[in-house]
Image (tube, helix red, strand yellow):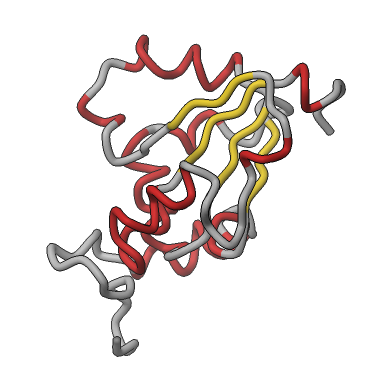
Length: 143
């Protein structure tokens, strides 16, 4: 799907979905390649981090070209509704789907690409809770 070897490809790590379930420590494990779902050890030419919660405070000129030029987004699993919310808030969802970058996600990081997570389920998500370590705020669903 990359159209070239991984050794010639760039990737951005997206740890956003892991925060509600594992907090900053879990994101660090993913970014450093120490998580149970390592993606960095594949031999990428270059790697970076794209934290979706930070993007709304930045001008698009600082991150949109980077996303458009990278070959792959490596998306950590976790809370799919939280990730969907921040994909929309950040503007990343507006750039997708596109042939580039390739979306490589684990668990919740892949579920956001399903047709109903965005339109049906995320419509019930009322935004992130203030307390870390909790599930998405979906009516009728308990922690």
